[in-house]
Image (cartoon, rainbow, N blue to C red; front, top):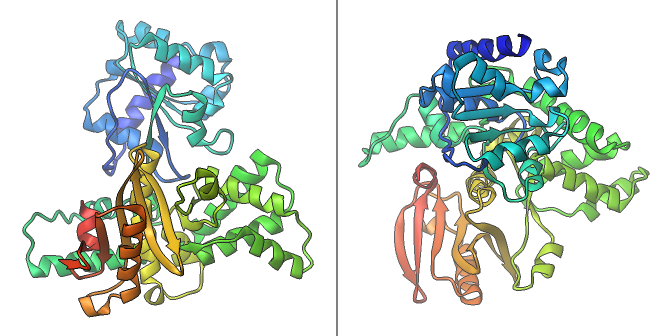
Length: 425
C-alpha cells in the first residue's frame, strides 16, 4: 500500500507544480531515453514539463524517484513492482515510465533491460553523478538508449522566461532588445535555481562547487588530495575557454611544495568532465591517436561559473563568454550523436570549432566579439582560409556580436552572422 500511495501522491505533486517549459525534444521510442547533463541543470523538471505538455493522465504514466525517502525504505522486490501496482490502481498498462535517480535502485541495469526488452513502454531514465554518472547510464546500457542532453537554460529559453518571443522579420528596436538580453544572459547564468528560484548566485555556485567536489568526485572516486582538486578547478575556471595544460598545473603545485602525482591530476580532470562540470575540446588531426593526445581547450558547462567565481570583469571577457555559449550549443549536438567537435590550429593560426559529421568536415566556425567588418581580426579570417584549404571544407562561418554579411575572400565564401541570430536558430 505504501508504494501505491507514493505513486498517486507523486502525480498530485506534479499537477500542483508550476513548471517553466524547457525546449527539449524527447523522442517517443520503445527503446530507453537517458536524460544526461550537469548537476542541477533541470533534468527532473524537464520530465515534469514533458508530462504536463503531453497532458498525460494518471493512468498513462508512472513517475518514481528512487532517492525519495518513501522509496529508499522499501525492499528491492517492492521497488520493481511499480508496473504491477500501476495496473492494480488503474486496471491498465502504463504508456510512459519515468525513472528518476535510477542509480539508487540496486542492480538497476537488469531492471532497465527487462523493461526495454518488453518494447511496451516509453521509458525515460536519469541518474545522479554522486553514485552513477548520468552519462554512464547510456554507456552501461550499450546502445539500448538514446541520450538527450539537458543543460542550464539556453538563450532561447532565457528569452522565453522573460516572455520575449521574437518573430521575423525583426525591427531594429527588437534587435536592440535581443542584444540587451543576450548581454544580460552572457553575464549571468542559465542555472534554473538562480533564474527561477532567485537563489543568490554567489551562494549557489559556492554550494555547487562543494557538491561537485565532495559528492561527485571525493565520494565516488575516493579522492584524497582535496587541495589539489580545488586548485585544479580554480585554474580551469580561470582558463576557460582556451588551451589547458594539466602538466602546467602540476608544475605550479610542485613549485608551491604541494605533492601530487601528474597522473592523479589527469584523473581529477577526467572526473570533472565525467560529471559534466567542464568539457575538453581536442585538436583535429587526421590521426585519432594524435587528436586524443593533443592539448585540449577547456569549456565550462555554464557561463555563471566564470562570471561569479572569477574576479575578472565581464566587459573584459565578453568574447570568451560568446565562445563558451557557442560551444555549449554545439556540445549538445555532439552529446546527442549528431556531430563530432574539434578545434584546429597550425602555425599559430586557430579556428575555434571544427564540426564533423561522420567522416566529413561539415563547417569551420570562428567566434569574434565584433560589430563591424573592420573590427574583425585579419588573422581570424586567414585562419579560416588556411583551415579551409587543409581540411577541404568550404562552409565557413564567423559568429559576431553585431555584423551580418556574406563575402567572397580569396575565392572562398565566408558568412558572418550575429550571435543572437545564431542562438535563435
